[in-house]
Image (cartoon, rainbow, N blue to C red; front, side, top):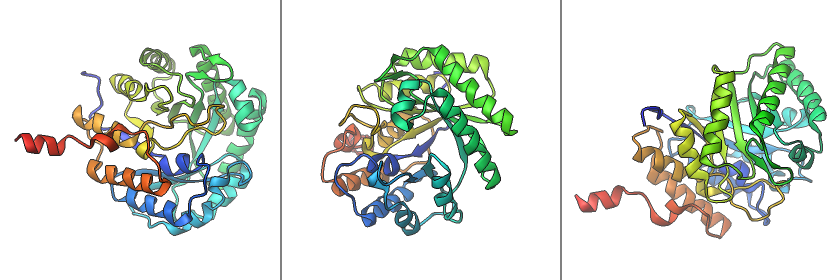
Length: 319
């Protein structure tokens, strides 16, 4: 395990990703309560809202109210998601509360891009050119490529590493044309197709070609391999992960209603703690935030740690 990182950054996406997919409306006050609970766990990155079309994603029709309502901590980066200039304009109104940065968002599967954004590969490249220019004009730095469907697609099947490399090249070309430098790359298993060997293979190929890019993984637990895939990423030295408290979320455009969402933040934090990897997270407080999410939604979330708890009290009892 010599390649394991000493420290891991976990970006919490549960509020944004989770609330977008719930069938029943969730009160803004409840969303804010979960944001504030997560802010007390030691997390340093929390994605708090989506500035997207309320017709397509009604769960975030109240994005402005939620972003205005939570209590920010000065040492936490609060972020939001948007896909076009209208969303960017909405986010810019909260520059004093949000850490704004631009991403070049692409997909390794053209079929998923068509389902998710109604754009083929060429259309999404052109959209990202325009969005990158809009970010620059607004003084928002563009330092990241986010690649969806990087390991497989419910509409197109297996995604070959060559498709991943081609999509990354598209993003880097967009950045070069705009005169910006990409430092970060997030590989997203948007529909839960990845397995540990595939994680290692794709990361290895990316590293061989672009060794200076800082890698992050966005893993879904659709088929129960999420934490195994995270372990594979850790063994490859990946030190940045997205996760969702309680295992909230799922992609509304994946064509698989009811599938589990992101890996649970508390499961990833527990894995890191057991491996001696620092996260800065208070695991007990995080578990309580997960249980709050369950009460808000009035249903059980998929996280095993919410059922089994942490190991601290069992170790204390044994001692």
